[in-house]
Image (cartoon, rainbow, N blue to C red; front, side):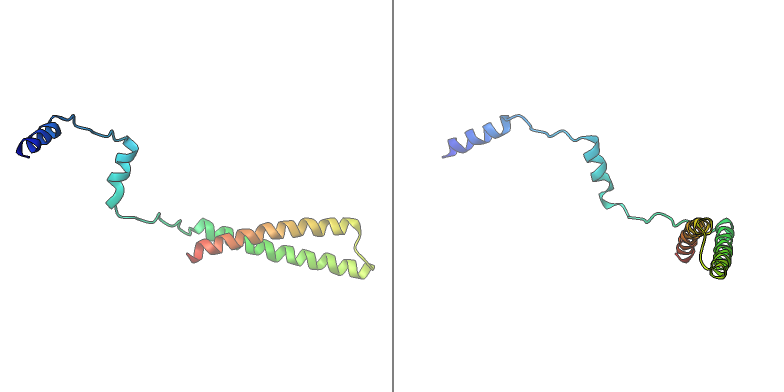
Length: 111
């Protein structure tokens, strides 16, 4: 038994050392494992953003006024003409764009 144990120990010591190559990507993952996680900084609401917000609100107000005028003129004439309807469609698209700008800037401001 002693002889078997000595032979097994000799074979274990004589065996070549097996190593696994580590790729740079693996090393990078292992390096960052204990790193603290930090959220990216929030974008600030600047004076330029505030100015754009006020301009977009003014634009929505002005478009609403123009839409009301066109609708009143159409009712007085007994119906909207094709030109008035096209103008209403254009104003509604511009109003939707301005409203999206307002919503985006308000979300940025309220963060």
